[in-house]
Image (tube, rainbow, N blue to C red; front, side, top):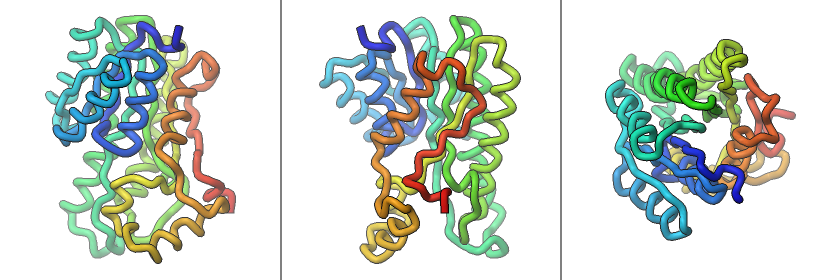
Length: 252
């Protein structure tokens, strides 16, 4: 038996990148997966990958800034598969790359709403569903930029710092109720989000790679593996943790 047989996972932002890799990793371990994203085509493609590999998945279009949509996502997990065991809150955006004083309020608010409020909205519905069952595990996708600053990314950095505080607080609140809450802090990972941020330029890519002592970007499967471990029995005494997977970036 796979370690997650008869378990159910929800992954937000699962239409590409880390989210897709995580959804597929859950499925390989036997979980039924609710694939969530605003990108319908990408989300349905993730479901197809899972089904072609023999897994079980359902796509739900979800904008994490919409409370009703988030509620429907969790309700789908329970109605389709009968329970919710794991949630990876991965949906996020990079936002405008500008100095702090040059950001408009709308640019600031959009990043905070998706990257921080969106995770809080998701947890508000995921945790009660887990408490109604046998407990569960929430893994929030933070970033090394939840630990350090980064020029021209103040909204993103602020959201990810806040996300670590949210993770630790929720971990304390539910530690004796059967729900563990952790975060993963990836370094720079080779995803479409990074390409949109300018890393399709070879020189820019080399510069980012050189910030990591391993002198490379991370791979999405390396992050998915961390999420799966945090949800496993091997991590049963782990809660409130911000697991850094960054090729040594924050060791400098």
